[in-house]
Length: 389
Image (spheres, rainbow, N blue to C red):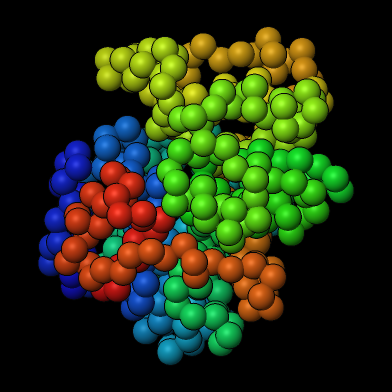
């Protein structure tokens, strides 16, 4: 089959690779109909997350059609149109049984790798390094889905493929970001990052009862989308001092809840950014935490900071004194997609939320490197690129 493969830093190539096969009774083989780029994939091709190997198939946000199932799959059948969770959970361990699927004890066969740096292993993720399982990703014509009875969901006939593709990552990640905030009626929520996850966090915050959402970015088209689709107020961090602006907009109090939907490649024009960039280049620091620092400083006393932007390792210059003395609550994690997907599918089917607007560019898999280059440079008003294998 045809697949988009990693061949080194910023080097993706379309190659012919062996077709996937059923290996376990709870496996399924999916013909990929749509697979999307994701901001966290940029961390891979930009070389910030280790244990990628030449020939690895990337991609973790996808939907498709069931073409084969293992003997243990009884809830889905050949021909079903499905959306698939980006994180892989077994469904039966202590963590999965309590809805914390991204902490699954059983899905990562390479658990010894992240244990060295994290102390414990998270769940596996499709196409996301060997530390996260080494599973082949979705930028391919076909993909093997392990624990398919838990991680695949039949798509409501009212949803298009382009709406369904974001049910496995962008929407549940954004919704989990808002859910972890513990939003109360009347709350003001600040969201850093107006990419796909940030846009869905905006919608989700309103769905969960926020009175106001303030979205922060510097890309004009993303800020306009946050206003038009998400009904958010917006701040362009290249034109204003974010901390001062948020204080002014909240009567000197600060937002009640702050969401970091950016992660380790955050940017701004401050001295701190160039300090982080230099340390990152020298290998002395893994993550640039510009947004996380701002969220801590901006959040009101007793508020909540929710983190879904990906962080991979170590950070310095953190304002922990502010976090502790302001009595902030921190919630964070990879998405528990399986926990949220049925609920979110219903939101989209009923018109309470939308995901299809995220698609701005449609390409074939043969244009994979072109699509990632466009996405990385934020060119041509791109929000998300979707490939049709």
